[in-house]
Amino acid sequence: MTLSSLVCRAFIQQRASNRAEELARFLPNAKEFLSLQSHDNLTQSCNSLDMRLIHPSWFAQLLRSFTKSEISLFMPLFSEKQRLYLQDALLWNESIVPLTPCAMRFMEQELYKRLIQDIPDLLPVEAIAHSLLLSLLSLSYEALQEVISYLGLRDLAIDLRHIIDKTKLSKIYAQLSPEKQTFLARLLQKKEPLIFTKMDLTKPEALLTQISKRGMNRLAKACYKEHQHFQWHLIHRMSDADALLFSSLCKPLSAQQAHEVLINQVLEIAHGFITNQGNP
Image (cartoon, rainbow, N blue to C red; front, side, top):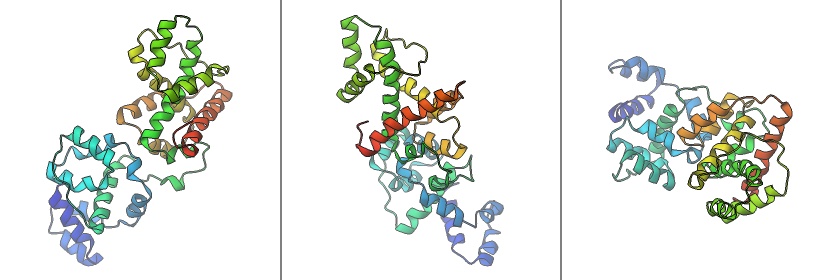
């Protein structure tokens, strides 16, 4: 939908119901305008979704169909970090268009409608049935990525026990932040109850990517029983590429006890990020 169509629809929706229908009949695609007359539910759902928690890669997908001047109307909706990402992803270097509060709400609804087009009956987080993992949905996309990385350290700790080459160990530890080194040291003092396939530690420069993938594996399998709407909210706190990885790994484990172990591992780290502001 073009910018002119958005403005025209906004004008029509402010008219009384019978008057709006009369006006819409003079427009191309009148059925589309009339079918979108009722926005009460959309507005309520949009208001319940914190757009700042959504990874900006999803917005980049949606905004590519707009011109750069039209994209400028959406930019006030995003956080500074989201805007910086979108500037690079969309090669956008225009000025941000200041919007009135009313215009902001309208643009938010337009963006939200496109975001949920594959799941139009999306439940807000507050309406999702109780889940042990619900606290994950309070995390920003940056914090969720860190949770995933810390989860992956469990796989690294398993394989580190078999490495005696100090030079190799030094290269591995050099890839980790001091906080992750501290967490890894704690893991090395414990026995890991759930072991997946061995990691390839021959390329230290690829270590962080491997850790992230291993953490995603644990998170995805911990979430495989979660409601579809829970999973939608969760993967939209990841990049679109990470969301594909999550979906490919979100499969059941043969043992129920293993599923419970993974849930507890996720909660241990997520709780640390929520209560300790970034330190699990």
